[in-house]
Image (tube, rainbow, N blue to C red):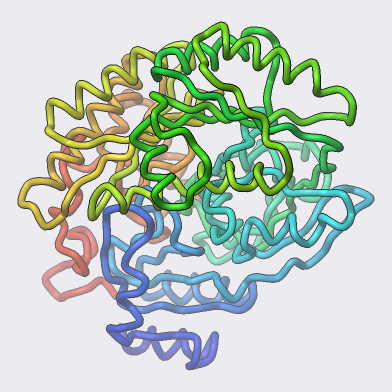
Length: 485
């Protein structure tokens, strides 16, 4: 029966755009998380109509499926844990319309995030959400995870910059949620869909908002003796009424790794560095720059440096965006967490993270979207060392427990996926999870659309998802007669 499905998929997209070759499948078993699983077929549609036909074919065959963009997600959301089909959206990579008068663009889900801003820059416009992976991540994945970015403090996350999307429902229907105008009547199904991690359907077109480029911007780099002092400065900047476009922090371990990696000009003897970017009308920023400098110095900063030109600014942001990649300087593997806390709790939670690192005997570097309290502890480990991965996952769960205990959340922008599904009970009661499950069932009644994501399993928070054999179907997808399709 599986061979029949593959033949049907080949008839939909053409034989060159479907594969079951082991070498090809192995390229699709990972995303940016620590989890992996082999799909059984990869199919690459070239239109929304082909996506509709693929979903209908998979549904008829009882085959689980998951849409995949660039594979940069960090929670296992695009990993085909249940086997089945990966619907790779790379061919749906067209910018279909740019409407400067109404400040919007219509794009396909495989469009790379940064390419939108590249396409509209000559018109004085930009697409604001800018994840660190924006040079490679795609809009469909940003939509699924409701991705944030370095400039989400002032401008908001993906959901604030999407007006509508065309989706293929798990029933195989092609429908629109929202549209080109603000405030569509009825229930906010677009708000439900964004951030649903591919469990409610597959986006095939997205209407994104465009914003004007600011006339002027200033980027400051402040060095502090300790993370605690840097955290105090972050809170004080916001408390003063200043809302920077971006407000980032890195600890000493991170800055040392980054400097060895890209030579961004960060002081490696500082306990923490804070990057502040201010944007606005030309001639209005000088007073804000002075206020930020004064606040940083009052909280112990020994140096506040302003980027002299665009080249230096780009070098500072290259350093920040390279933090995850720089972890290869510290170890063979790393595991990134994504908790959120009230920004005033940063010093306490950072201290707890340090205690967790000591308790588990692990190296943890810290990178923060400090302005909105989004932590990214980077836990360095060696997968070849027995027990190292398990200790790392357990340490990550303890970090999430600390975030929730201090009034925060278990995810800011990376999503739940496989990685954090068993930690959902830290934040949500059984009744909350039941309501979410009923909502999912309303869209996805057979559970074939990205199964196994978001919702807890029988494991406890901090236990490894690798108890499911790599490349095998999840138990619920297999019966005595073999695979369900």
